[in-house]
Image (cartoon, rainbow, N blue to C red; front, side):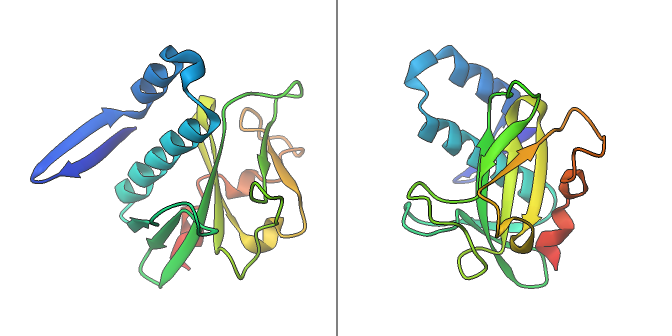
Length: 160
């Protein structure tokens, strides 16, 4: 996947994989916050390539990261990313902010979870996770234990 950024009349394009490789090369300098920022850049490129109009919120004060327009109205989206596989082969995502306040329908319309090493995207409506503290995703398997697989690449949720 490529990330495109418009600067004046010029379009700068970078491969997401090379962005991650570059970030990994920096080692400890790449903080969790920086990894989140890189994942947000990947999200921006992904939804733009799917034909959505997307806007980034200003600052870190809002409960959502982006506003996405898929044609049926504006959707507030929180983006989460996971970079390390757990011992059970799963990837964990928090469904709350840093102060442990759970995301709810008053705050966001969807949570997008990005499993970075597998380049796997999951789009969840609030009703799926509103009573959960976290989500565990298993992108390597399509078995029954992966009850959230139906939300993989479910970008239509942002068009409803």
